[in-house]
Image (tube, rainbow, N blue to C red; front, side, top):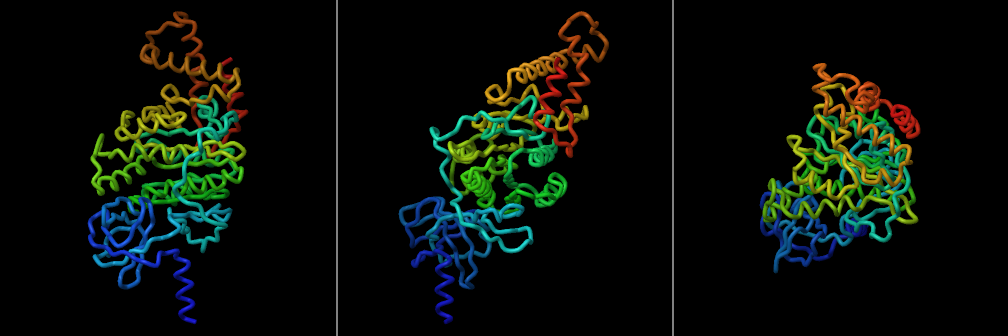
Length: 433
């Protein structure tokens, strides 16, 4: 009977009957031989005390292979056995995930007990084929006036939220998650401080995880956990999209995700390029971001990716690459917080590439007029403040000045407020008449 129990446990592990051996341990990776794996295969490393960790095959040589562990290398030694997982890296999926907080391996970390999933999906999957993508022709309401009115987003669109540290990315994320019209919401917190996870749930989401899945890989997790946390969250979003749902996907942050790949790449000997990022980082970003979108005869994934812009430098290589992949960008400006404008969205330097395809002509004209007036006010701000500008000198600027207070109020929104799409558009059109 005891033998049958052992056989049953081994079958559940999906391990190969043969095993390899660790022959070298270095900081960041392990070298093993005795197996013939492929790049991306998952292995289980078992020590003499039968304690097991998992890792991923990340480089191959003629008679050996390198493993990047999901945990840290401490406690691993030469001679530990390596088994090949025949199913690869999968994450549990199903409606039971809703309302839960999990790690990148699909293990619950919220203390609410075991997770009973309907099935599993591979974490690494190809993006939607180009000719299977549906046209983005429906508005996606996020409940934030300045985004719905001036940076209108469509179902299946991918946008970036670019900001320096402490400007308000997490607060805006919480506003979008609470106000979005999507039935299913998947949030990936990658590489953030552990303190921020309960704060995000309680403060930014109001403690309400209804129809929300939170995938967490904090800064103290290994680089591989941080890297695949983003892919795991995207696989969960794809599961619900394949069921015909419109899904909101939010990730904070792309920069921490890229930093995790930088650590992995440099440990494997990749050459560093701009700011130390190896070439693999720039190829990894589209592999993740292009998985969002709208698919014919299925649902959609509308994605918001936050990008931490170090020193508010928009020429940062990760920010630059992300902008080229995404369908729009929202820039948060530290200077706007000095004027008490929250969320501090810089309307003039932000753009939604699909707004003209999904908004009405009246809405588009009102948004263009708003931007024009806002630009005029910025250009002449000093003259207006010192009283050097005389009313009547410029008819268009006079109108902009008369609407200045209303425009600033339109950009302001309390973090607990949610506006319907119709209310946001009607207020904009009325303001610009």
